[in-house]
Image 1 (cartoon, one colour):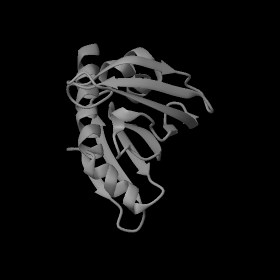
Image 2 (cartoon, one colour):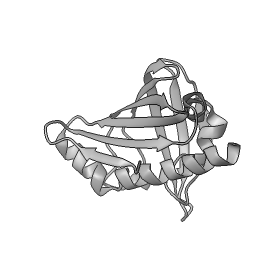
Image 3 (cartoon, rainbow, N blue to C red):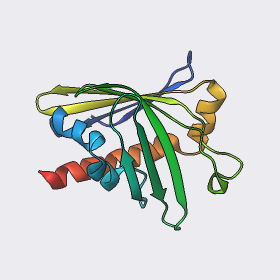
Image 4 (tube, one colour):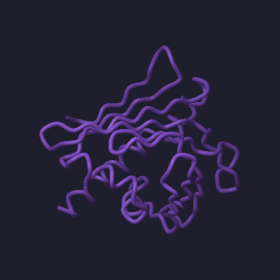
Length: 162
């Protein structure tokens, strides 16, 4: 199944669905373990020199993505819900700093759902924005493309582990 990207016409949400050829427990671990998360998070060509994860409800995730040009993009998030191994919900803080310019990404809630069938895991991301304009701005910034590239990196990391 090819990844699916769906923009809701009735709500300020974006849904991305991807199937991984790995069991749910392993895909879950890729999000719950900062070592693994730092290996694949971000679009093609990005690295994560900093990945600090307090993986619990109310805990924080701080990471810094470094782009191919050397620019660093710090991001902070707070976990709202964690239901192993089926669901993670978190909200990113509105980014600060010059690196984001005059168009920083908005704060929004990401809900990740992990389901397994026949040894493969379907990961569904629902990004819920406060307003349709925020979702549309995130799309213009390349949010969907960056997420799909990140998921390609996750698939490659999973394959390397097996």
